[in-house]
Length: 118
Image (cartoon, rainbow, N blue to C red; front, side, top):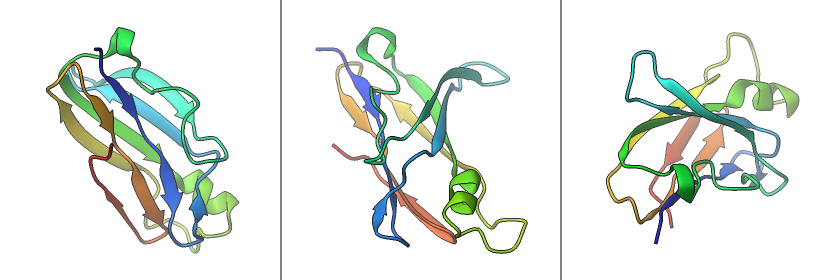
């Protein structure tokens, strides 16, 4: 069984999925980090397909960059510039090539949390 990487973003301030939020995935195996994928969340705050599908899934160090600034501006939550949160990088390791890694983001204009989901 091959592994894969997924995410979803929930807007905890508004109590809904964060639709239309851009996410970039980088491999941290080189300097500068190597861009692997750039995706947008759908109406459910998820991506339409795994960010890192089974064919490309490999152990290593990765970074998801959630570009939350544009989303916060679009939804009227931005407040005064510069934003407190504009980009949220989450660095993590994959050590099991056969596992599902799910890295969700719970977002508000002034804070966020993440965890390894299922």
